Length: 337
Ligand SMILES: Nc1ncnc2c1ncn2[C@@H]1O[C@H](COP(=O)(O)OP(=O)(O)OP(=O)(O)O)[C@@H](O)[C@H]1O
Ligand SMILES: [Mg+2]
Image 1: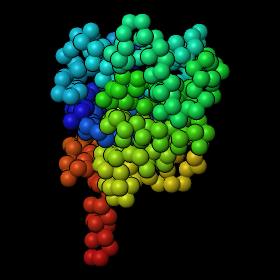
Image 2 (image 1 turned 30 degrees about the vertical axis):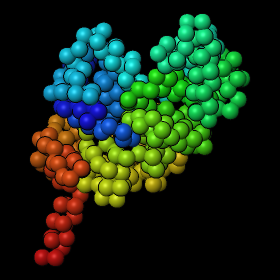
Image 3 (image 1 turned 60 degrees about the vertical axis):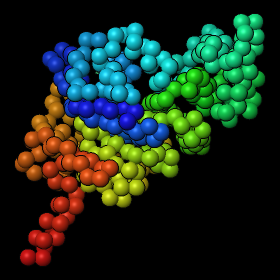
């Protein structure tokens, strides 16, 4: 297992007191898979990524049974040890790539800076030229044909799609084992969006890179992803292979998300809410007890105020007292009797 997170909780310090922003999140990412984490805005997707990267607000309290990367517990490392792992083995790309590129330096300089000396086989005096070559190659692999022009540009001169490709090139310059893509395409045209996801899928195949995709836009990634995990208000709802999640979800939340992605028009903006369920998401200070979906779930019953335990099926798991089929079964029985 590349990533193995068990019962990760993050407690945020707010003026109203401490709130549990992530509630016992478990997530496993296998070597070589594309895993998609999907949920409404504010559900905690970016926080999960930040917990892996070690970017959580230092005033927030983190608790976990394990937060493992390749068998090493990231929580037991010193900041320096952690930076060494993150710097080489895990890379992250963000939604608004241009904001993370340095506005004052050319793409050539930024890319060359991301390339380590050991990435290129060169002597001291040929190194700069070798890195130049490596940078051109990286951009070519990203499908950037006018790479000379892009290399000479400053970030503001690039389109969103081109900036994102540069960001990906920077992130994968030294072949990380895990690439975390946090809503890498939300602000883009549907065509560019599909292109970026296809690019990620190619990188995954070519370099056997594992990828964690964070998105609200299941449609575009559906073809490329292997497994899907749904998250709501800081609680994991269900995990499974994409076909299972699409055609036989057991959790009402996954079912609602599927329905939404079928009916929703393509252009979700970064802060848009998925119109999945009746009602609105509770605020952090007013999280429902037990299963946080409870008040918005049409299958909810009294015992949902107790947090459901995980149910593990074959390569499929969920947290729900009344999974869809059980309910349908009992409904059918009721109708027959
Ligand atoms: N710096 C912060 N201060 C206070 N609350 C925060 C902060 N960062 C995140 N949160 C809260 O933590 C929760 C999870 O946020 P997170 O950014 O992980 O959501 P998300 O699923 O990535 O949403 P989006 O789809 O909008 O990016 C939200 O309720 C958010 O309001
Ligand atoms: Mg986010």
